[in-house]
Image (tube, rainbow, N blue to C red; front, side):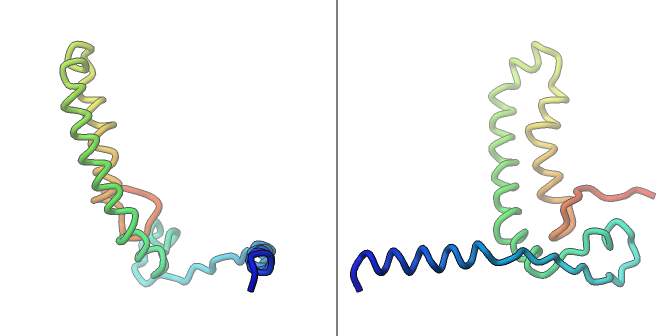
Length: 112
């Protein structure tokens, strides 16, 4: 096959795949009874993507944020916003990485 035919085949397949309609995700009911978790009801693919991609990136962001916090600590101490800097650079990525349920998009937990 020459280059033109290969390029035409790849273009045709790509165009065909992009023309497919997007299908809506059907959320199965959850047995936990928690309305917050039932609203999210993560699927297996979302959980696998969360474990393999999102959590390692968020843990890396937490480590990088901690390093940036240490570098900016003298300046934030002079400015009087150490707490805000710690929360935004370390706390937010750590909360997303360690508190959010597996596959969920809403972080945190409810305190009743």
